[in-house]
Image (cartoon, rainbow over all chains, first blue to last red):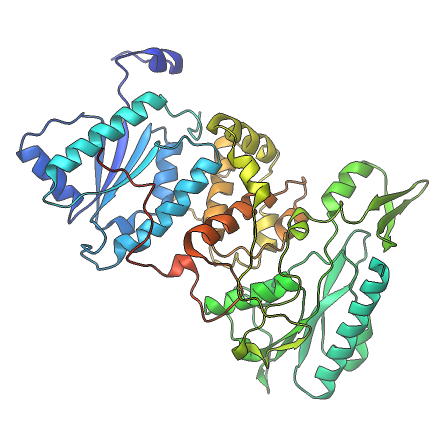
Length: 150
Length: 339
């Protein structure tokens, strides 16, 4: 594999974004599994980190991912009301709402960090949303704002 | 009525109320402001005797948020015989708000506190004055007839008062400490009831019109001089964590350098932690040694929680702050959805 410079990365049509995905153990991770066993195609751009609940996703995870140079972040949890821990995703939702607005206030493009709900039965939806997130991040190009250069 | 007479009136009121509190044996200590040893500054003072009441002042330079002395990270005021001491706090609007907000986070017990309220008439933007005067030595600062007079060795300048206030003071809607029915014996002096605050947030909406690229450039340029001294954190009454996220080294979440990425991350997360908690006192901007004004970020936070959760921090100790509560039905317009 050759090392690509920042410019050639963004101008390259074949450039594939790297997205880190935090999936909740009970719904979204199982949803991703279902998409897999059902052989639903979706872009291989996401790298999955399994977390116990979307409420476990500390805003630090998201910002740290951006400073470490990930092009996008995807967080997925159970639909409201379906949380295995009853209210984990409700707490997370408030956190994400505020973090999302603050990121945009600091000049991170909307769509760099994405949030979604996907249940264990929604393999189709999971694949569809990953496709969508990938195309959004692809359009934005590589993450060069928060990334620490050294 | 000029600002100087207004100040004099406020000061006399504070002294009178403080003296009464001591005489009626309702407090053991009073935290207030005294004249600073440097111009453009007023110092906090803790007094425990009637005779010292005369040291209290109010002079538009009292930027310190006194609620900071009552957060759990600071050792409590205790006495071997009396136990926890009862404290009176000289409170402008934002100090009152900070105390009430800390109570809503269960960080302090309002029964041990008396809020000595008065209607604040603003705090001078000392950073801006210092920047405009430059390297020359300031020897005296006083407010007279709606003008801020600054005297030095061989210069004397005056600035219009309204214009040289802290940016947050210009848009402040809570001039005197809030009071609710349950707080009636906590608040002494001039306190006001605020059921809801109407605010237009015009100042933030102008910024919102910029593109992502412009926003990043603007925020980056205004924060790039940050030296990571954490004075903003130390002055903030809401920053009471025993171990701040930037001091953590197990794991090291974020770098401690003055690299752009590290600075932006620090301010982003500081803002994140202030969401629904910032009381808009402007102490963070006032203490910044390099003169960064965090006003816009703090206003944005206020705007977010007001729009999303109909919440304004520090008005009622009974209402849980938005980051401590949740609701089933809430707007999720930011969520990714199928087309």
